[in-house]
Length: 134
Image 1: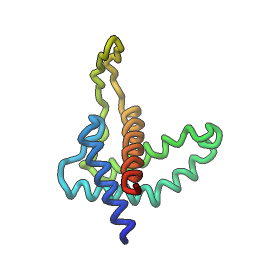
Image 2 (image 1 turned 45 degrees about the vertical axis):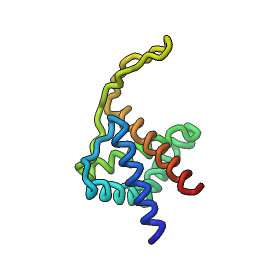
Image 3 (image 1 turned 90 degrees about the vertical axis):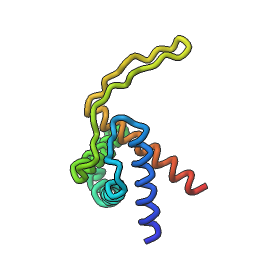
């Protein structure tokens, strides 16, 4: 029970941090929504994600593991389908200039927004797990 509560707490923290600092993920600012999204995301990662990994195993083997981002994007898509207050949206990165280095304005469509959201959620969750273990 303690491990489940710890995992849900980490998911709540991850979703809160990413939704406040990343434009592509929007979650209704309500504790009930964050808790339900965290529980559903935990269930998706524990039950559905292994099934999706097994189904996509041939493609993942052919690409030497480079297709594993699709599994995370599919779980985020399913999270959005189950919890209606969670939304992944297309957005425009405004770009920036730093000492002559120019990054232009970029429009990320919905597919790339799912990919980037899953990557940012994965990295943030990994960092939080690392912090909790140290």
